[in-house]
Amino acid sequence: MDRQNLTLLTDLYELTMMQGYFKHEDQNKVVIFDAFFRSNPFGGGYSIMCGVEQLAKYISELHFSTQDIEYLRSLKIFEADFLDYLRDFRFTGDVWCIPEGSLIFPREPLVKVIAPIMQAQLVETAILNIINHQSLIATKAARICYAAKGDPIMEFGLRRAQGPDAGTYGARAAVIAGCAGTSNVLCGELFNVPVLGTHAHSWIMIFDSELEAFKTYAELYPTACTLLVDTYDTLKSGVPNAIRTFDYMKEKGLPLTNIGIRLDSGDLAYLSKKARKMLDDAGYPQAKIAASNDLDENLILSLKLQGAAINSWGVGTHLITAKDNPSFGGVYKLAAVCGKDGEFIPKIKLSENSEKVTNPGNKKIYRIYEKSTGKLRADLICMNDEVFTEDEPILLFDPVEPWKKTNLKPGEFTLRELMVPLFKNGECLYDFPETMELRRRCLAEQDTLWEESRRLANPHQVYVDLSQKLYDTKMRLLDEAHS
Image (cartoon, rainbow, N blue to C red; front, side):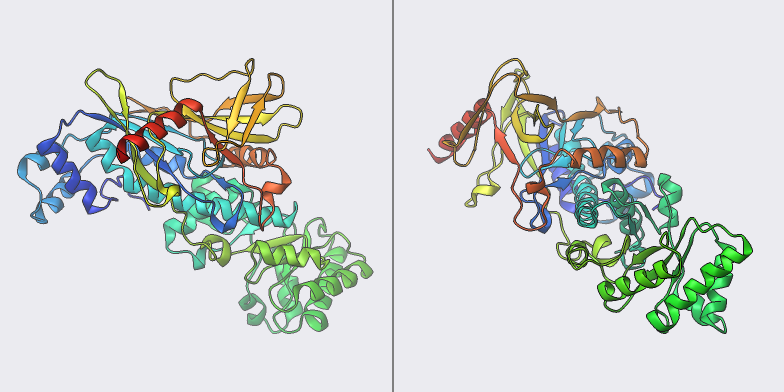
């Protein structure tokens, strides 16, 4: 994780294509690639953009070390002149992206790379690796936080993550999307996010009695005293001993402002309701009840509907591995090539599957909000030279069923251009905001969604429309290809 130079974090064919361009194409030919995805994971109505910070660092550090070049030479497929060219390789292009923590939707460009062909080709794999993984985990975390209805979610999946990078950057993504903190101490150090935790069953088992273990823990951590109560018997032993421990804290003059119990097995709805009554009857209504044990958004929502008396949730495996949808599905496609006159020539990829036909050209995105509510109305993808304002009407139409139209009148909507510059002529423009600031922005973004788009099952899909100019360009290229 401490190797910042990830230049060889790429698929071999990116390098073999680069050598082909070096031998047979103009090395300075500027192209545009778009990174986008085709459908929301988990059957959801939205996704969360994540990974921009690591992407910025990756591109900033792009260079082939002597060790890298000698390794490539050992493969015996790269010629000496190409390897010599790599010695001075740097990224000199432009990159635009949707800001980290933003809502994102299918088919719109998440990252736009405008660069000489060899540079734009090389960065494909790493861009997809970084954005796909972190956006996936952020989206899963957002769903879990939504199901919890304001209760804090602690991410603690490190031991089940697919390696240190996935565990650490995944934890950061989960916090950006709404988790209150993580158990991952390295993530806390690297990204200045809250680290949270209680204790394991082994803490209880190492002592002669459960009560002794609880009292010792309370003396060590009186301001963060959450006791794991299911080692032996939750209702007959764990909760009564937790109450005795809180009584002991009261006698010792220790603060009782942050006390609670954690349930990690059994019928969480039943046990939490019984435990709540026991704690309240003992005079500890402020004691929190946390729960863990293979939770996800669906189980949390179910427990909420059953009236479970849980107000804090620890979520591990299902979050950090995105267990029910383990890949994001982002792709990276050529959108335009710069002609001899300096103008970009739109390019389109065809497919037998309509959802795989790409949107051509140099594009940008406007996000449209309903003025009266502040809620997200639609995203409009248009050509980069198009300008839309709040003073003129906007016609929205479904690009698949274009007869479905909506005319927005001035005063009914507000606009925001979505993509921001990340690199300009190879210079990084990213300001590296604090992770907790990104979390605040992401929560505000999620509040712009209608509840119908946030529901976990069969959500309303947010409209992603094309401008008339982009739609006409796409239809023209389709007609030309078929003729």
